[in-house]
Length: 129
Image (tube, rainbow, N blue to C red; front, side, top):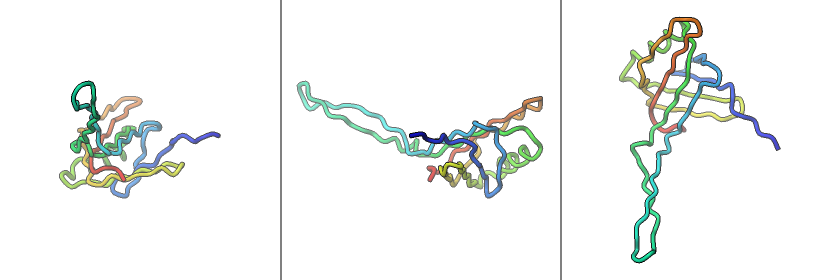
């Protein structure tokens, strides 16, 4: 049985489509990380202790854009509306989708204005639903 890889996603910021560099979308849903330890019950007996780190329960979306005037203007507008959070949505042709509310652009974009100029854009916010 074959499976389809998740490719060619669409990304929207506050309802506006964003053209992204192919294969550049990275998503971390924000379910939180876990730490596994053990505790002793005496002798050679141990029990597993699982700790959920709630400080890591935040969504993360990263992608690259080509440095066109339209893309740069869109990102500059999103960056300058702080502290008002954005809504980021993504959809893949295979049906995988998600949205992150309270999204904040966390990196100051660095625009490479030469040939093949790309910029990495990173958002953090609420866990992705």
